[in-house]
Length: 373
Ligand code: HEM
Image 1 (cartoon, rainbow, N blue to C red):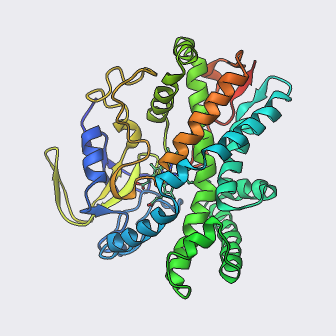
Image 2 (cartoon, rainbow, N blue to C red; image 1 turned 90 degrees about the vertical axis):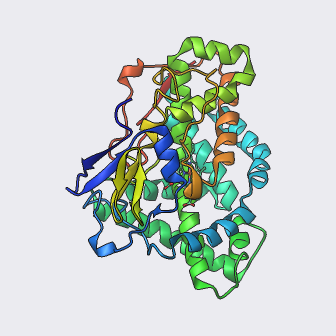
């Protein structure tokens, strides 16, 4: 492991601190002296000029107060127990999607034929969106997540927001027991700011809540199939499935605003690991580097389903940590179990070195996963 924190220049030509050490990343993610907002937005450095995500969001004084109220509302609708209760539906959707996969001729792209439809149906079921709209959601998410094409990115985001706006308007007029109605009911009916937040969250869930679990599932299957000795261990002892899920999350590249990690700005001077991050400085918290820190993860490149402890930060940490870790873990565990049980001969149809990545999308991940059985 090199230096835990050092200066870099961003693609926009602005200076930033890149933080790579596991303990420094974790400490800063838990530190409210930095946030997504900048104390003086006009003077903020940017990560990228042609990517909407590479700049500050909101005003720093109200950032944490506003987000605390919002997270409380989110947790009332998506408590870990609520998300755990989705397990029977997730199991049914995994079995149905695997049934359709079994009818495919091989080799087949597991991403298109299983991971993406599975993750899409789960999130649509959770939010109450019809399965027929999945192709549209996929098109808008891919447009919205495009790197280096701001117009297409804006068009995807606008179309997704328009769709969710209409859904929120409908549910406001005719509330039911669905997720959007429950989210709306956590504030007064005339609270416009709250409605805006619901739209943003639901759009985020429809985009990242499909793409990220699908990508991480592809990643987990690839790691297991490319490491037959680890696959054998999991097949011999299904309790190791939990370890396989955590280890593939550790080695996964989670979604982030920038290629070099989560984007934050210092709201005050911060001393850490022998350096002073000054107020207003841009800070990039590199989750991938932190998850490969050899001081915490011995032999970090190795995929080891028995790694214990495995304190990865794939979901982030602290205030902004992913609110859906329980759902993501339920999805990964159930889908992997279904695939391993139903396809005892599952194997990669190409050499691991031939697999390609989605370089043009912020969500990244494998461009496809050809398999046979
Ligand atoms: C393997 C799956 C997943 C991974 C690795 C992952 C990773 C992350 C990470 C790293 C963050 C923190 C971003 C930050 O600190 O700036 C985050 C936030 C978030 N994730 Fe996930 N996520 C996953 C699954 C999901 C799912 C299934 C959903 C929706 C159902 C979801 C929705 C969100 C939302 C809405 C946020 C923003 C939370 C906030 O700002 O308070 N994620 N996720």
